[in-house]
Image 1 (cartoon, rainbow, N blue to C red):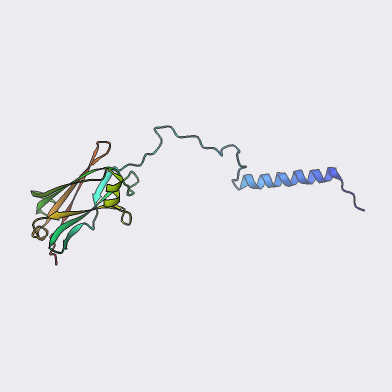
Image 2: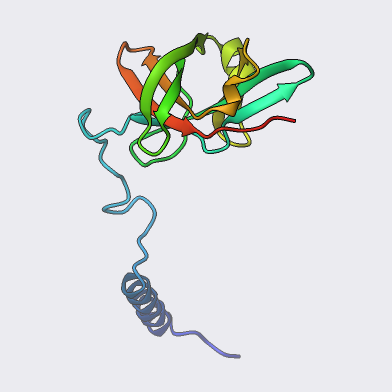
Length: 177
């Protein structure tokens, strides 16, 4: 019969535990609940609050003909501090101008103006496209000749907190089929 020496066994277990603890410490592992495992809450001034800071007329904005109706398919993208697309509640104002010089977007006569609200959840569902992460607005035109000339689209958004974002883009002349 083999007898176990409890003193030697205890020493072996203590050495094994010391080796395991050393390996874990060298690998950067920590015991659950140990020092440094809990992060301190950020102060209110350090908490990042995503919100749109800029916006752009998305490059795929263009004139379209749907039956006998001509429209401007305007896509607008709101961007946060990380330059990522974001949703936000507010009211958009669109103004379409004749461009007297398409190279530098010099404004001529104002041709059209539209307002669109994205304040409610239903508005968001109607205008926000989750695939492109842009707002899509179909803005009707009365004059089918408008797309034949260079135009400038100015977009402003009054955010729900009262601040305003603005952008503009040149829309080159297009012959619709």
